[in-house]
Length: 226
Image 1 (spheres, helix red, strand yellow):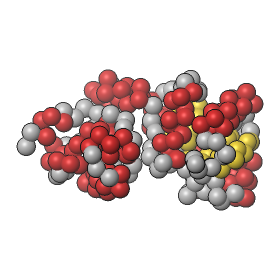
Image 2 (tube, one colour):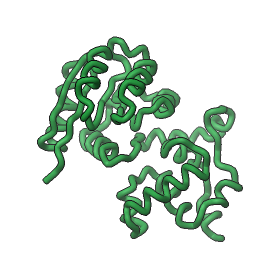
Image 3 (cartoon, one colour):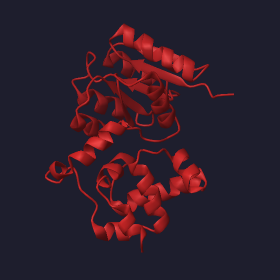
């Protein structure tokens, strides 16, 4: 039997709340859904419900002031995963949201099945980014190198990774979840998690998304030859 979750949808558009509620109801049967339309009430709900499994947060609802609202919510409830669900598709906004503590970013234009998969990945403890955002990162690599916040991985750091860690990082950079990586490499999911932790530590990055974006230009075949 699938586990039931307790999920807060914070969005000021009733039709979208209804749509995402439908996605949750069909994809995660038995889940409890709480709805709100502004940041102040979302903060109040998190204070009263410390057992929330997930918060789906709109960037542009009343009280948010862009990413400031995300920071406020993360400070109020640091242990509850927060996912941005927004019509915004600018890569830099997405990356900033992850930097400020969101564990995923779902665009409102995503197909229903993709939304379900994204929510499942996040509930499984992974970070979710739309694959097109990762591809954008690859296509604009020359621009990214000119920005301080984007640091391509040096050959020295890559050489510090074991062969198995390189294989895991390669699959992470393709957008695979821990479960998918475990299946494809024929290892336990707990082993994948241990490798991911070691990769983040060795690369000096704070989360999975930063690792993925840093590795978007890497030719893994070159390093896996050794």
